[in-house]
Amino acid sequence: MKHILFIAFILVIVHQSNAQFSKVFETKTLRLDYYHCGNVETERFFFDELIQEPYWAGSQTNLIDTKGYGNQLMEVHTVDSGELIYSRGYSTLFDEWQSTPEAKTTGCCYPESVIMPFPREKVVVSIQSRNRKGIFEKKFEYAVDPKSHFIKNEQEKLPVFDVLKSGNPATSVDIVLLPEGYTKNQEKLFKDDCLKFAEDFFSYAPYSENKKKFNIRGVWSPSKESGPDIPGDNIWNKTLLNSSYYTFDSERYLMVKDFQGIRDLAGNAPYDYIYILANTDKYGGGAIYNFYGISAAHHVDESGKIYIHEFGHLFAGLADEYVGGVEYSEFYPSDVEPWEPNLTTLVDFGKKWKSLLPEGPTIPTPVLSENYEKLGIYEGGGYVSKGIYRPWINCLMNNLHRIDVFCPVCSKSIQEMIDINCE
Image (cartoon, rainbow, N blue to C red):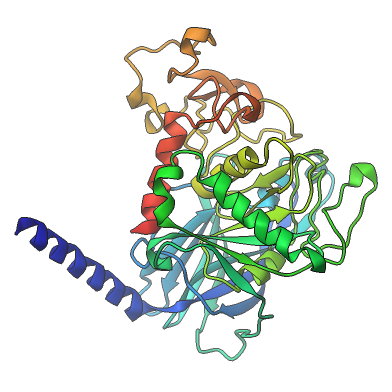
């Protein structure tokens, strides 16, 4: 009897939450496109346009971001009452570009966008960015009238197919897979690659034990030519998303600059997270928290591990734990605690995995064979060898060639994000 009453209580709570969502939002998406511009010292946002998309796959209960992850924070307030009704943290490719040598000598603009449930009343959308001390500062604000006839409602309708269908998008993690560099006669290849993505993805914990909480869909659209650009080899292909290796002159960093173009494709399906499969066997990829992920679909040995590593960035805000490989300067200032859960500068270690360690741990924890699967404070991570610490000697967020599991800190972060999306 108590079990029945408990289930009834949960159903009442869910019903009330859904009713509250429906009072404030419609189950479709409002997308705000903008340009993110500046240089190493400056940052500005310029409005582009508003777009209505047909689906909202996100949670209808967890509408306010409580994790505090990301370099940007988007908030939606009602005009009449000023109530905060939606917020999400995220990061962008522009953030990384600002830390490159090029940003010291020139300015640049990146096309970006944010999405939210479609509001029923007038709202103000604001975007905050972290300053060099890690504190959010408001950089952009735009008033939206949801009844405005200037909200674009046109979309190229593309074929969508199920790769894995487990449940209601509102209570599931919804991944949309997009094709990059697949020509018109390679539709079957893309669909096979989507199935392989799912097979590889759910072969790693903690995703394996949470498979029934995920939906995966693919959107099909061909490219004129096959494979991403490889500037270092003078290869330039006409592809759907214009992806390119050598992003920020890092050979294996495969990315897409036009995030708005990515959104155009993804909007054909209900989604929470966007992952792009690139039709290439060249090792590489990239992903950014609550932005998008991309990687090679045909690398001989490591495609599954690349997926799982990059999705760690996209989904759970996990940082790279390796040293070197990029040209970023001061990406993690030594006097600021990183927001990513798996790195620390010890500035505010109490918010990280300190409680999981014994009193008075050795800093740094020595890299010894007996410590290989022991939680500690290992120096080196976030691309630098000194002043930044990681939880494990090795993890799937570090060296893919020597490990098949996430450390306890990363696993916990992934599980928490799954639970947030599914409530």
